[in-house]
Length: 198
Image (cartoon, rainbow, N blue to C red; front, side, top):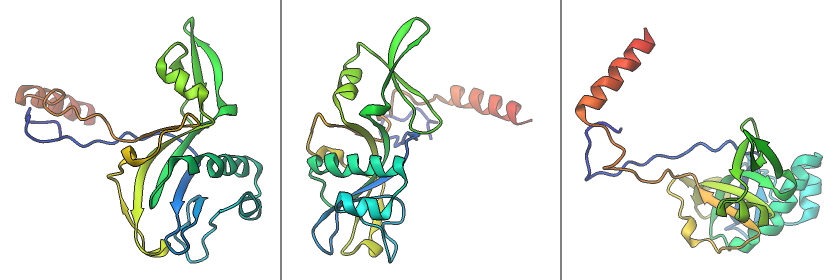
């Protein structure tokens, strides 16, 4: 993908964020109501959560129950149109201050990877002010949930900003023309990968 050192084409990459749980949120096109859910929201008997009571009935397990209630409360503030999917990265109670190599970081571990942000950074201030964090990666459109089609070109610029929700998309910053390889660099890398393969 990076070969050729071209400046006239874009390089579209996404970053895999290691969040959990998967969160679906938005407006159910069949009734116009805001909901949150987990995997399976497009099934025939989907567990859609419009209220805390729905979450208690559909997801009684304590950890998931608590995270979905936080998502239901705060994701409404984003004024989501349609339905979008993301990975929850943290709630405020997941954040810890941790020393790593003598420096203090804000850390959180939604799944297997520990994320660490230097405590004095702008990002750390945004994260510690938020009630939750989420990385959006997929949008859905259609007239009913079971018929919705997925798109990985999500436009988070349409979402309302709120200090309660730290969010971003999974796109990798477009580095076309600057992070591409010349033919010589491509040949060297290909040779090294071949060597590693054998």
